[in-house]
Image (tube, rainbow, N blue to C red; front, side, top):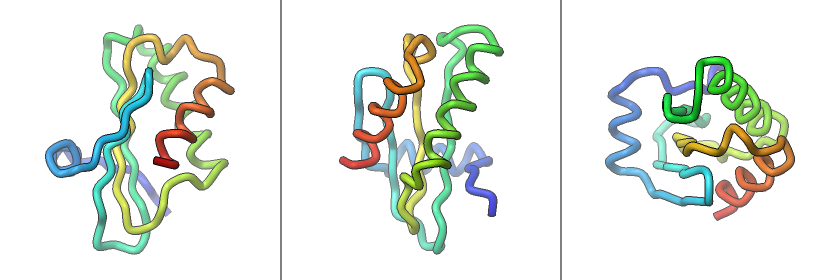
Amino acid sequence: MDHRLKKAKQFAYIYRKGKKVSSQNFTLFSVPSKFKNYKIGYSISKKIGKANKRNKLKRRLKEIVRLNNLPKNYFNYILLAYPGSADLSFDELKQQIYKLFES
């Protein structure tokens, strides 16, 4: 099952209507969905670094979400990363993502 948000329209809707929860390096937008599964999109700005740094951060975030079954069904999410988040260790990333999904 594919859990990715792909269309700009979906991102715009979640940014506009979603509930926002922030930590030091991330913001999580969530909005209820009418479908049974969840969808998640990752927003990683060019301010974070070059492509290899952004891709590494995105791979780490996807793995944390996949391994820990964090998202709830019937919700759509966007995980927005801020500059400096790519420099965190895997465990620090994990802790911050946990806190976002718990609140």
